Length: 360
Image 1 (cartoon, helix red, strand yellow):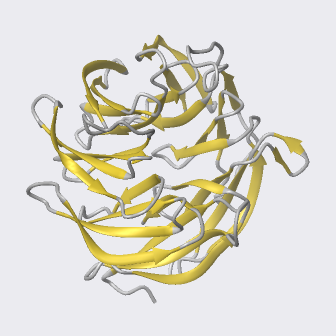
Image 2 (cartoon, rainbow, N blue to C red):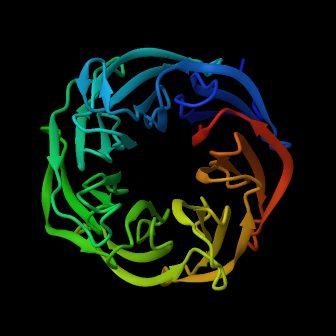
């Protein structure tokens, strides 16, 4: 049975190095912040990003590969969540029609799953069956173009796809072409329709990576990978348009080493924004002005490990969990609800090459 003061925490990993088997399951003790291991929830290849259906009955994982089950491209796997134990039962999988899928999201009806293919430079839509399984892709949209960085931007590299809070539009951060692409969701046919405002352009070479909406739906925040910046955006939900308000650094002003931006999340309270830096190995903290969406710097917190590719905040806003990819650790922090500051709880969980955290 699931204790009332615990939550399921799933950790996606890279399986190409070390002894990782796939998706790991932990029980979060909400009293202490400790992660209690429950073993391997499902064995699968390179589940580098995870997403759950709105009803929390199904979990979807990208398989970040260049070939999958004999086909060119990566994979997308569907699992049923056992409600008492949290263990995962494989349902089926589909080819994503693009190499190295690195992000997956679910629309708010749970009827469609969206995937960003990094090496494919495209995004794909998958209808969901009644049993939570996946139909073949109903749409694949190919991006084109390039950026100023010849090593990283020789072509399009879709890095994330996020439906908006109204479930009417979706936005794709494409690192390779320095654009945040905009689409209208056709939920009747499972299509992505190019929006009238086709894209939002960011600074050349910045490399947009991940997007996080504010709980009030009025603002969104875009993390750039190579630029290590955070762009605050005003969101017009009626029109499905994003307008840049402010750009702030994710790194300290005096930092001279190499670092890249990774993940970004808004606290459930809507008061604070967090983003991770790989190289500086930190989380930057900003306070959010609820009236304007503007950001004010609060501080940096070391992640106590190397390469914080991904992190997650529990739904109550009490704890934050950082996946330190190259230290094989998950570190738990408490969030001060008044200041946003992070305090390590002392709980360090060892997991092979963690790259995604999902708290249910």
